[in-house]
Image 1: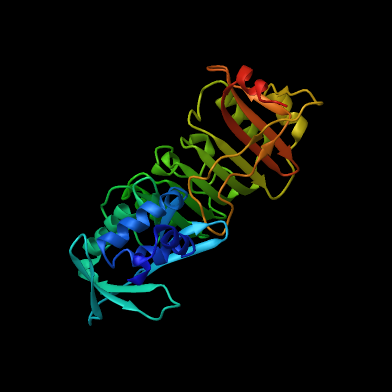
Image 2 (image 1 turned 90 degrees about the vertical axis):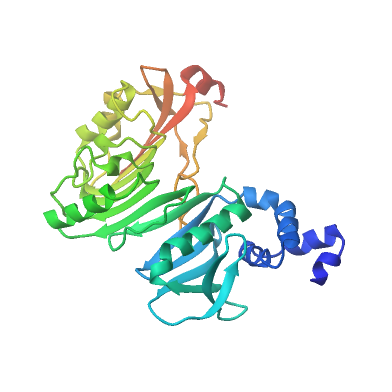
Amino acid sequence: MKLFKAPYVVQKEILDNMQTSDLFWLSFVSKKIKNVIKSSQATRFKSIRSIVYDYVDQDQRIIYIPSESGRDVIMVTFVIYKGKENHFLLNKYDKKIDFKCLSCDCPSIMSFNFCNKESVYKSIHYNFLDFFGDCVEYQWIINRYTSFFPQVKKLSLVLDFWRYEDNKAAKQELENVLSSSPLMTHIKLSYLGSAETLSPESKFYKAGSVEIRQGNHIFPANLRHFQGRQALLRCNICETLHLIELINRWKYGQAFQKLEYLKIIIDSHNVPENQVLNSIGIKYIDATKKPPAHTLPKLYFDFRLKPNTDPIISHSYVVRKTDNRVASVSIHRNELSFGVWDKTEEEFLSIVE
């Protein structure tokens, strides 16, 4: 390519203005071009938080890089049960894949035979690892219709389970998916009306983060058993005493050892602020001072939403008895937010302005 006969500064300027997905495909032209791209775009690649293998249907996935401005689609893959397209060689891993590109304006389309599904996704994944590196979070989304995932390193699972049925069979279906899969980075659960409760030993509670939409705050998922880092719960009904219990269990070191962020939204009523704060032994930052903002990168970044947790800026905080760690507490109308700092009370107060 004539591009790579130009001075390096010109090459870099051109590459800087290309989509990351286009750079990936350009890297297959030659090893030299791949090395130039990787060295010149190292800073850009370090800023990539995740690459998502998103579920479309049983036979199709869309693979993209999420960002605050949208998503950069790398490729679309789909299963075929007969017939072939043009062979395309993913050169490093010597795996031929039936390949088709619709046009220069469309993302690459890859089709492959059903029986080759495992090996094809392995080849795709290891090419990503070679190009983008292993510091990127690679996330494979599954849902109630499929539990297939390739057995490769550096690939985490995300479960998107959307059900409204109020019956034991629906809950059992969820448990079957969970039990047949490794521990998950993130679980998104929408399950209104159920009176069936997940077992306290369910893998659900071991996920790194959960996003739950359910009618009652304890059916089917009860945050009392949560062992992960980030949780968002939206429910129609929630008893105040249960909110108090959740915070006090953290405060006295009885649960939630890994918890970083918790947000609870109650649709039917406001959270009684004074009752909750008085019951958890709240402490206050001087009203004349500005509290720090608690925010964290989300473990699962959906390109349709913000990449970080909502900032918690509050004069109210609580201290954990076992290690003197601080958590900011904010109650506003029907929302309770709880953010744990990696700081003792003394360290926390030192960053207050």
